[in-house]
Length: 383
Image: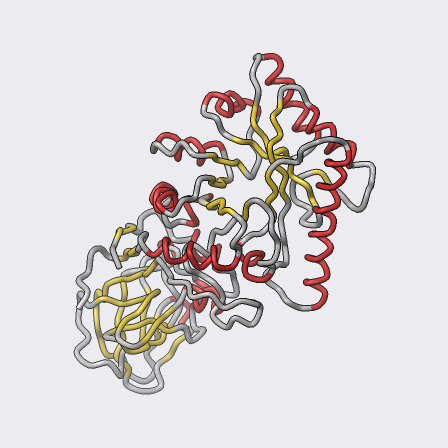
């Protein structure tokens, strides 16, 4: 029986990343991997994930901010790091001092960065971001429009070394006709920009556009890099409805909490704030030491979400509290204080996945993972 480590904790098997990377490589045989470790690797530990990826031969990492890039550098990671988001001008000096690659979020931003580099007598490494339909950052491109001149200008800036070009898929996780047509159009626009650059004698550099679902659903693309995040963590949708391929990923994260109290309640008695659960029969209730402040979505309240106690499925009852929540353990024998509740992972012959939490809470796996708070310890375990 697993012993309790804390009131609530996660266990992360970084060794399983190697297996998941191999599964990605089976899909995109000619494409290298840029490991996305932004947001503390979706809450699972950026440095630990990056070092595990390095052991798999991954030599390029994607982060969201200069702070995240510096965190990797300070941990001794000297491989290529691309900042996918915006870096304020006050932090431009870190880019050349720490050999960090910056994405160009707009032509105006590129001009500002180039002027800074010129004034300081330095060259700054960059990737050109092309907006093919996400409408977030990058130079908007819609079939040979005037903005291609802005892309040419970025590549020709004297103090910027533009060594790559990329875009992003907003609906690669959907296989409806409208979504696939949209994604296909994005690919066409991206390829068109690359060819136009070449026609001007400009080397576009390394190309990358596939996110995790872009890898699963468009593995035939043969750009220089792809950008998996959830995939190397072994997290996908459980039903596989919107996945063309069927790789064998291993989830690297499990999550647990303690039983802190067990009591019987009787018809008419209610559980938690709002009295949304009222017992209709004698019910054995266990309180477990995890709540929404730990990252368990409050939207799981009264939705029939189940956790595992002694390998048996038990429903969450009543509203989640900030630090605790309650479950119905009537059908589980010998439940006592200190028993371990499995919230994500395997226990006995049963399993609870991140995707089950996400679907019940009507959110996505990315948010579920990144919402696990800093007060929940991350324990490194081995397979």
